[in-house]
Length: 284
Image 1 (cartoon, rainbow, N blue to C red):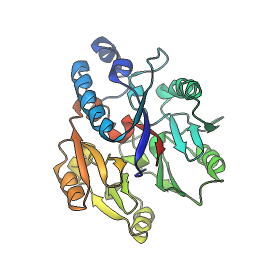
Image 2: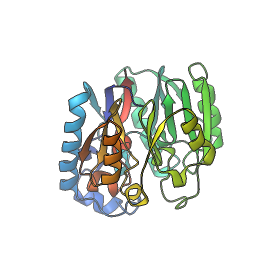
Image 3: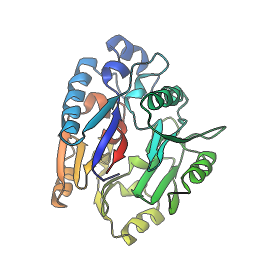
Image 4: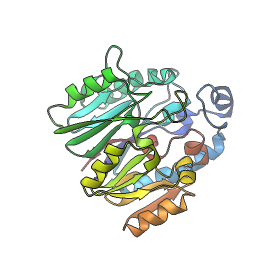
C-alpha cells in the first residue's frame, strides 16, 4: 500500500454526486455529516486528481450508474486488489452493495483479472483490508466486515499471503457510523504508518512496533478531520486532506513528501479521505 502507484480507479463527483438536487435528496440517507456542495466538490476533486496525475501513469474512471448512490465516490470499498487480481467484495453498508455489481462489469470490460468474489452471508469493505507488506494481510472485524467474509478472504488469498492477521474493531460511534481498519492506520512506507492509537487494539499496535514500523500519531481533533487517512503515491510520498497540521509536520519530520488538497466537500462531509477516493490497481 506504499509502493509506487501505477494504476488507480476513481469516480468523479460528476458521476457519483451528479448534481446539487441529487445530493439534497441523498445526503441524509447516506449519513453524511452535511449536504456537500456540488460545485465545490468538483473543484476539490480537480485539485485532488491534479496531485495524482503527478505520479500515477494510468487513472481509470468509473462510469455513472443509476444502480448506485453518492457513496460510490469512494471507489476503494467495493473491491480489493491482490497480486493476482481483484476480489469483489460485498459492502457491510447495504446501500452500497450494488456498487460491487457495477465494479465487476467495469473490471471485466477492461480485462482486469478477478480472483474471487464474496458469496453468501459474507460482507466486507475494502477499507477493512490493509496490506502491511506484500505478504502480510490485515483484516478488521467490525460492523462492515463479518467472520464469514474473513474466512472467505483468507481462503482466496492463501496462495500469496504468508501472514493473515485479524484485528477486532471497537464499537466506537456505533453501527451507523463508518469505522474501518483504515480509519486508524495508513501505511506510508514499509516502516512508517500514520495511526490513531486510541482506537487500536494493543496487540496490533505492539505488532507494528515489533516490526520496527515508526508510528505517526494523529491527535483526536485531526482524526476527526481525516488526518489518519493518508494515501501513499510512493514510499514516503503521500496525500492528505488539508488542515491537519500536526500530522503533516510529523510526516515531514519523518522525511515524507506531503501533498494536500481541500477536502471539505469530497472527504470530510462523507468521512472518506484520499485512500477512500482511490482503488489502487497496480503498485510497482
